[in-house]
Image 1 (cartoon, one colour):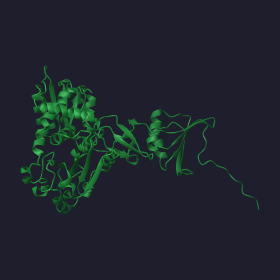
Image 2 (tube, rainbow over the protein chains, first blue to last red):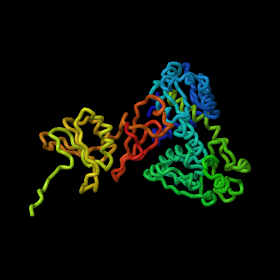
Image 3 (cartoon, rainbow over the protein chains, first blue to last red):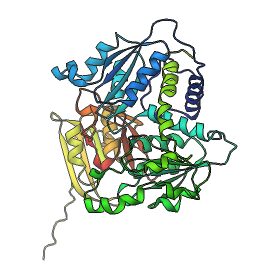
Length: 309
Length: 155
């Protein structure tokens, strides 16, 4: 299995073995055991949409590997303003760098960029579609908190998803990635924001045990992982309905009295009230540590696509 | 009283040479004619004809022409159960049911307004997902959204 020269566009392109390889290299990165580039490698950061966490963790990852970074963090400062197409922008930039990391508001833009460019392209978010490096980070957080994750001879992990599961991009990608591993998935959301039908069909077809529920209290005591996402006010046609249901999708310390000792709560951040701050002081909170895993995971991805390991 | 003369009239006239596209779902004939763009050909259309198998069906007959593989692929997307009859000297010399391809390129437009293919000059590419009941869904290779056959737009 070789990653050198590969693009990272969609979680759907990755097999179980490839995912496990990325997690293994991320572990090496975290322990400071990755080599550094012996020849100068340049990463071009092409962010047509703002981001702080993803961009800074990628830049940090590249610099930790001994590479350098060029690029922009705002489309306003580029020739896109003059009407240049994305395809042409990529054809130009590919001559300047060894790897391209791109965030763009249009869905499918990263796939198009990968077709335009010879060097590897890494998708850092193409609109509402994919953000695969976030998913690898989420999987790494699950692996670190539950080392049995990924082992075929272990009982399945029970993983709950909480909040807006209809529009939550991270939920869609993570649930598809988890379908490669033994696990049971519990989807907890208001009925209007349930997981889309086509995703349920894919998970069921792959033999993943799925449960749908409306209240977190019904299931929290049986979970190994609770992955919470934002319930966005603007997704509700009726604001009264939003005010009525939002309380059912907030995790508070008082709800954790009878949970499994090894329950860990994850969140892609930023959170806006869906996990109260009193949870931060419990051993179940893992979302800040999770955000910190962005650097080793992105080091692993860069090291693999640039042929360092 | 004189008996009325019985007339046997074909609802869609036979063609001497060419292709008959049969078993199209009702209302599909006009789409088939539009996408095959056979302006210079002699085309006859039957709409809402009675059918033993389908109840109602459409038929398109194109004189003096055989279809290219791309054209057959388009028909298979619109009408996965259509039959093609190749006619020579008024005789059916070959008859087969279309088979939807695994991938279609450049013949379907993505209906997602946020898909990059609607903002840049890109040849669209869809994978064809075939369900066991014979229904089709198409997944855009770019934005990865999947659509029912009824939702798609043929270029």
